Each structure stands twice: as structure tokens, then as C-alpha cells.
Length: 254
Image 1 (spheres, helix red, strand yellow):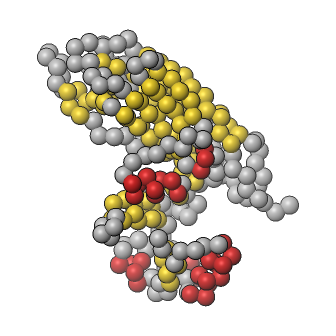
Image 2: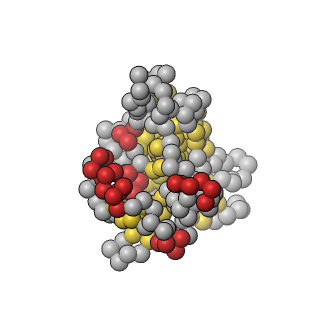
Image 3: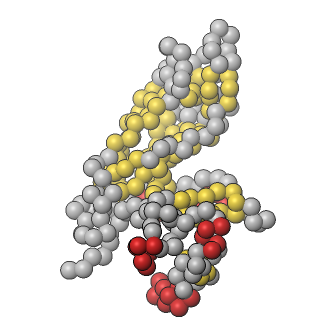
């Protein structure tokens, strides 16, 4: 692991010592490498003096051969992924923390888990966490992704939180095609299915500039789905869940 910055070596050395950084910090004073990678923040001009030359904040994940397997970038340093996501990307799988906030549903055949992934389930301004809806379907059963014909139920997830709780676009796994006699081609999931909904807190909910207004928040999740075999469908189900998440405490001047 290493990081690259437009700062000089002296500045990076001081930063590493103060923050306890133990991996290499590389100095790219003229932003040459930053430009080569095409990540120079062009919204910052020479008129912005000390800020000119900064890259868009981001992370590349590579394999042992140095090939990029994933990348994470944002338009502001105040928004970034939880470190757990980098590990997931490197390993190619999502590993839920058993100690993080989670609730269970489903029935004797279908296991349904709603969990928060990243940061031990805490919420902090700008730090992206994942709300994961995990279906564990036995062999022979599948659930549907939209669209579906009339009379069939596609999987639908509804997530509600307080003001300042910001949802991003979901990260959904690829579906498989299923063709049934007399029915249009359907998109289905089977086996273990992870529907991932990234979210973060804006300054309205958890600001780095003031003490927290409340210690925790409740997130309400509604899951509607219908499991089917190739021959018949089970009754549609709607399950409601509530997750209580601690807001991360940020020290602010008195």
C-alpha cells in the first residue's frame, strides 16, 4: 500500500508522523504522475494557489500482477469509502462483520439478512457505508429483478432514514436469464444474493464542525420479494426491519 500526493517530502513526513501513517507516502510535487493517471482536479485552477495540483481523492486496488481490479473516486475529500470496501475489492467478495448492526428475516427456506457494512456500523459525515440486503436461497429457488410481467413480484427494497441520511445508487449483482413457457424472458438471482445500498451522512446529520445532535439514528428497511421455482411461485412477502446505528463522535473545539 502507498499513497501519492502533490505535497513535498517534508510535509508528507510531518503528516505521517502526526497521523501514525506507516505505509509509504510518495511526493509528486509537479503533479506529473497525477496528470498521467488523468485524476488531476481540473476544478482547481492556478488562482487557487496552494490547492493547485491536487488530484481527485481516490483509491486504486490492484492484484499481485499490478493490474487494477477496482477503483474508488469522489469529487470531494469529504466523501470516501470505508476501508473494508478496499479489502472486499481485493478479495473479490463481500465479508460481513458479525459484530456490526444486523437483523434477520426470511423463513425456514430463505435466509434474509439486513446488515450495515463498514466502520462497525457507525455513521460519520461523508464516510460511505453499505447497507447490505443478503438473500440466501436454497437450490431451486430464485427471486426476480425488475421488470416482471403482471402477476409476478420483483424484488423491491425501500430504505428510509432521517434528514441528512444520503443514499447513493445501489450496487446490484448481475442477473441470469430465465425463460419460461408462455412468459417473457425474466431476470433472476439465485444462491447468495447481496443487494448493496451505499449511504453516507451529510453535515446536516453528522458534521465535523459541531457536536452531534443525537447519538444514534434509526434506518427503516422494507423488503418485498417473491421466491419461485421453475414451476411455481411462493406467496409474495413483505418484511419490515429497523436498524439502530450509532453516529460517530467527532471531537470539536469547545
